[in-house]
Amino acid sequence: MTFVKASALTFSKDQVAVGLSHGNFGSHVGLAFHSAKDGVKLLHLRFHKQIASEDFPPTAPCWMATVPEIHATNAKALVGIARAVAKRNPSISFGINLFKANGAFDSNGHYRAPRGSDGLTCATFIAQIFHAAGLALVDIKTWAERSDDHLWGNAVCDLLGKVKADAEHIAAVRANINGIRLRPEEVAFSANEPSDSRPVRFAEAEAGGKNTMATLSALCPPPAPPAPPATVSPVLPIVSFQPPGPSNPTGQL
Amino acid sequence: MNSIRSAIMSYSDNCGSFAEAGSHAPQRHYAPLPTRHATDESAYEESADDIAVLPGQVASPDVLADYAKRSMDAGIVSKWRQHLFSIRASTDVDAISETVEYVFEAVARAGESSVDLRGVASNNVNAEHLVAVLRATYSNRHKIPGWEHARREASEALRLVALDPNEVLVGLD
Image (cartoon, rainbow over all chains, first blue to last red; front, side, top):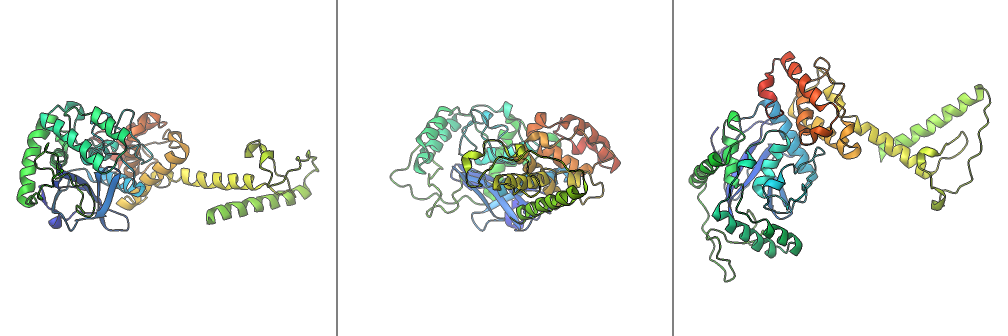
């Protein structure tokens, strides 16, 4: 399977799809599935305590998507788990500690932050749903530090402040800045790999993630960056730091 | 609400039957229950289990509510078996999703021990629903009674329906 524009993607009720779009931190990832009664949904973690389950494909922004190669029996179980998670509409803090996030979904379908976890990102949210089903996309223990992702950690803390997250939570996230990040495009790349290549290790995911971003830009040209307001933090040039809201209705991070 | 109402009705029916049966049975003498008022909260120190309700006596609202809740919970907690132990059950995504949801509900209401897989055998289960149960409980598999046993039985159950266990059970080791 290859990535196509989400608007051109068709997939059956007993399959899932993984979608990728541009986002305020570079890219943003979500999981699409057929709900029991409400059509096709896209489940994603927009940002701090903002789970979204919206119609798929979204009208805006542009998304691309792929249908992961998963045995039909397993894909049906994964759809069941995705439906259950969406139904429970969990409140999930946006947090960056990758290693502590493992095991975030309990065997009752609820999100429960593991000990030491500060929350999930859009990427770890999707990775953890697959992990809960025993269908891990990535081999998290191989993930390594990247200098860019120290900047990303600081940018997350800045934005948590803008959405008025608890000071205690922001401090916990700041203490976890270590440059280790599972990027959304790496989740999408891993989902698109043959099933016998998963879970994907860091080196392959990093290289594949770059190609996946190139594919995204070809299918969905990146939006023009908004004129920087005076208060913009200079840490990440591609980041606009607009919290989800009227001026940033998609709110994708 | 309807299920609570029906549970209460069924409870009242049982009380009636018991009273009728009692008229033909040898006479028994029960110690009288202490006099209580339903509104006297401080009087209810025992759990509902400890309070007998005899023919002709009205159960307290607490007893009825507890009975209704336990009846409802017991029904929900056992629903995950519905498709699992039905070899001819539908295996479409909606049926599989129901099994996943029922497993989650059972665990939420009664803990992991309520999804007891020790009785699973390759020839008495629906293989695809078993895979759904195994995957839904994978994150806490060490707390599920018989999970490893069911995982082993799943291999043969899948073979019986011409599915490759090596492909289907990937990641569950």
